[in-house]
Length: 133
Image (cartoon, rainbow, N blue to C red; front, side):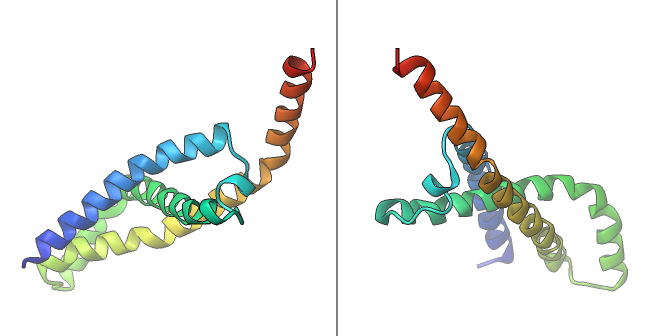
């Protein structure tokens, strides 16, 4: 089995999970607080907590991989000058995206947790305005 199949599977997983992650981020941003999505202690939601985090991370990995094309050309030239084998160039490029994706992921989780108070206040205002008539 060629290393190209591994890269294709990795890229396919990154693209599919990144697209699902953007939808999941939209749902969490619009509707859910952190206790209902990424920090849940409920038995069923505990499974979805890890899925949500996985999709959040892959969203950031997809975004960072797309934006890192800006520095990919100089990086590939430097790696080629060091006589790195051609099949490993793509793997090294993909690995360079992970640290920045982790930082963005952590920043995103922090932002989701900070938004809880506003979402709860909005829910309470909605309840007072529309349901207590």
